[in-house]
Amino acid sequence: MNDTVQAEGGNALDKVKWFLIVAILAATVVGNNMYGDMSVLIRAGGFVIAVAICLFLASQTEKGRNFLVFAKESRTEVRKVVWPNRQEATHTTLIIAAATVLMAMLMWGLDAILMWAVGLLTGLRF
Image 1 (cartoon, rainbow, N blue to C red):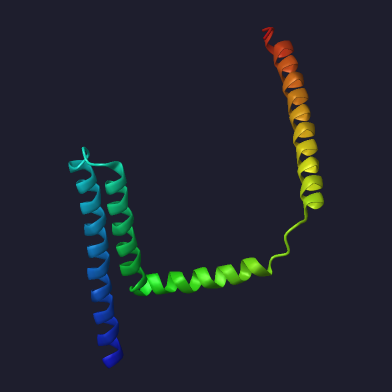
Image 2: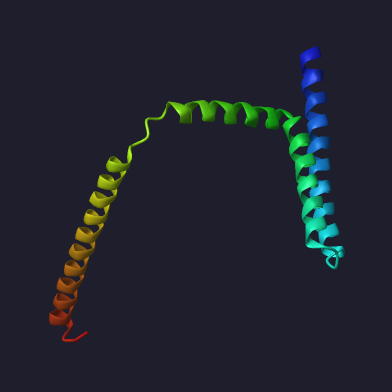
């Protein structure tokens, strides 16, 4: 029973944090609109500070912690990937370009044949 109460309490606190995040972002948008005559540098700095505060608050929630764990694991997985070298990437790109041109020509030819067949059947010339 204690675990359920703690989970619900944590969930309620997370909801408060998310509400606060939305409120801060909304206030930032409204403030940026209201103080449009101020320096863009000052407004951009305020926006960056507000977003940093929101990111910090979000990282303190359960979903935020899960996201940070996911991001760390993703970074680890990306490091495990064997990336192609320049020559392999160039060859793959040329193969894809050739296949694309070939398919475009085949579809153009099929379109011409179908247009000719429809012209014969209907008596219309396109």
